[in-house]
Length: 423
Image (cartoon, rainbow, N blue to C red; front, top):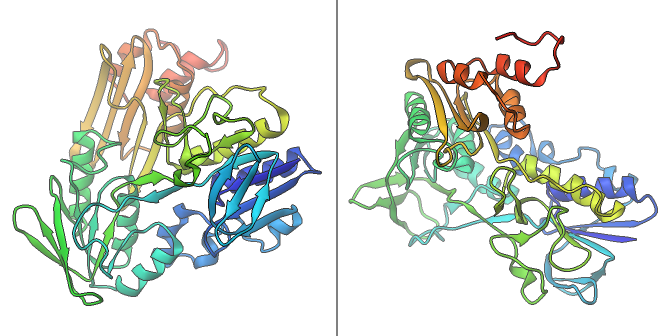
């Protein structure tokens, strides 16, 4: 069996390793379009903080890892997929034939439609090549403007702060991490950042970036007339799934590649995983792209199993879960953290200590949660939501005191006689 994987990120690497495990005699080819060995974008902040070198970002540290597993790693960009001929074409010539194809091509940062975004000194923070550019300019005391305070932006924020730069964050929405946190929690993250020397401008839109080509400083112009000088501007305004090369392939796409409960695409023997896969959401049943590394790893493992062993185990859907560390303040959100129509909620807010928890219920089932400054309950929250656990009398107890989650979990999930809490 010939297995070809497009994309050498976490989804692709995990899938390649699992394919070798499930099909010892088949061929496994992993195609990546960057010159470095397969690496983790989630390790980039640690590289910016000087905690690791570039080899520390590599997904597998042993240089002989892929050779030992007989995984062929090819560096090249896939330009087209011919599903009828079962082959993929590479830029510069060459083709790879397949029996089973996994598309794990990831995503690309979206450059905002701002005049000057193409100037030297303006970049994303997505690849190792980007990091090298940032390190050249982000010295202690340098003025840096970060456009975007979403999940990716806040990860970059921490790394930049660790470099000792003078940092200004500009966010279009009215709070930080708006797609993960509500107004209370997002406002608390903002206060936390400002207390640590980061300037945060929410409800602010960048009108243009000015500067002579190659010259510093740049000027970031905001709607309303303010201008912020910058030695470096980093844009973190979202990503888009890499699906352009699939035009004409017959593979159905929307925001990503549409996949079913087996991660299979719309044409036979083609699968998708990671940031490019638009699959079923566990909570809502809607088909969404969840661009986070845990989802990519899970997808890679599941796709490899179905590619080699057939469609035996349907996926229940991926749980929307984000955990973020912003300058030492950990925030998390789960599933339908914004609540559901007709549902109930519980909230506990301690702004002076930067502690916050919000629970969302549908009937007596926990369907979503937000927590900030609290880390002990992460596993319990996930377990209750994924288990769709009927809380019974514990719903009212949690509404009165949301911190009793561990008690609720043990009482509703542990068999009688196994040290469960008694109400």
